[in-house]
Image (cartoon, rainbow, N blue to C red; front, side):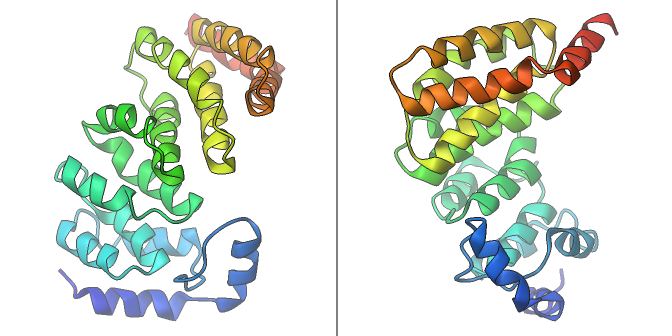
Length: 230
């Protein structure tokens, strides 16, 4: 394992502070950020794949991009629920949440167990992480059966009442990704979206309308019907 301070030195060498204002404008917390692009992080990560101890050390640095890099190099087979809980409560930005969930947590065998707990949690980024895991699994895993996703729809309905920006966007993402898996789930997700549109909550109505726009698009219809006929 290379020392974490050397890898952080590599990150600092890649840093472009001029990126920080743009990152801040899109809602990224730049308090501990260096201004390193995601492609640059991914390139650096290739040198350290599967290094669990380095990942833990990078996370402990609290540097924004070091934490993203940690999610790219950690070994998902070693990651346990204790680590996931320790990391999720320190999410302080939507991009950190989504990168860690998409790069690492989603690849663990306990991802959906964590999601079931996190969607009920009060913390904004913990709750976002729960719905992000649903979206990532729906997008990536081709072996899960339809029933496992149908079971998420009432939970999405409940989550759609949360007015916080980063939660509502993740709820919307989860609903759309479920609906894009295949034609049966597209129709089920449309039914749920139509239900949301009738609710009193302005957030629920927004989620429903936005999901319907994509799920009724020609591109998604062609994709899901193509899956059915494959």
